[in-house]
Image (tube, rainbow, N blue to C red; front, side):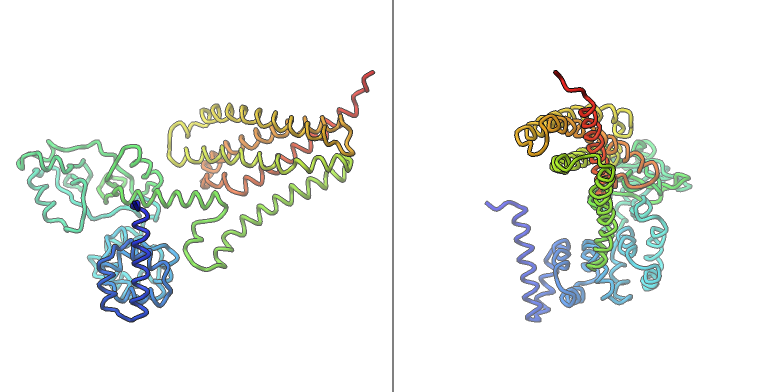
Length: 477
């Protein structure tokens, strides 16, 4: 039996094939019927894989309502290309069909000049709410909220609240009726159950729920997502500094935020940036990735060339010793980088979700340091025994005693490298958060490269120290 995800994928493929066939046959009447019957999310996925001419045909056939829904769901790179193809009046008609918050999201991708021209194409009563939202940062509550809501005065009755619901736009979904006083200050909410169960002449004040958390208009979207997650919210009021009701945020808005934040952390952690998705330009994508990669290359060159040249110039090791040291150098660097990445990922996740335990650096340090000691001891002992055994069985030109000493150096270096990297992975996310930088950068290539360099430096220094101690040790009789 075919499961639901596979069924859905099959239907989208069939839709794509059907649309491509109808465009090739120029059967636009049938294509219009197909588009009208399809879900906007499926049409959006089809639009993303069509060429420029086919996309133009599709948007010419979609009515403004359908085009608006599709435009809001497609990826940013495709959206930018469609913006270039649509005239300003066409874009104005499409944007006018969207709720104010979604319209603001779409217009936020345009230049300020073109945004102003699009808004001029719209009636003042439709453009005014959008203009108010565009004032706020895109990733704040003001940029996310929908100003369209159902509200009632504190002095009204349940019957009045029900009447407000009946008068509201049928397209406006609602989870709560918001209650304000005569000055427009937020006082609480009425849920649907209250409206249904209370008699109509019940005063709103007697049925008011005032325990729903409010969101400040400038609250960051990540904090909003955490608030919804921790309190199982489906809707929350947005208020200004005075406590005046400005709009509402619903759970579907928060789902989009969570996806966006997860993508951003994934991109930053991988050493690139979400802006890579804003265009299909290969040069732009390469330009976004190159600074990170060049930084990593510089760090790797430092580790492999600078440190080696310094120790070589000091004639720290003989050629047979160098050969044995180089053999285990990648393992030292890799284990340090990987262990630091594990710790930073755990810490970054905790900071992103806003958990109190994760925000307490001392608690986190106590837990992660104990885990690090266990891991570092296990890896250090195993690496030391394995490398020491190998060098003992395959000594080559290296004396047996030196092979054992290098095995000890490898084990200690593995332990120290993991401890150093874990400490960096623990402290750097807190540091970056303190200075206003996304903590996800601490799990990126830049920090991993730094961990590699520290691990190799520790390895070389320990090997040199132990070999010097071996040379200074009097022979036993």
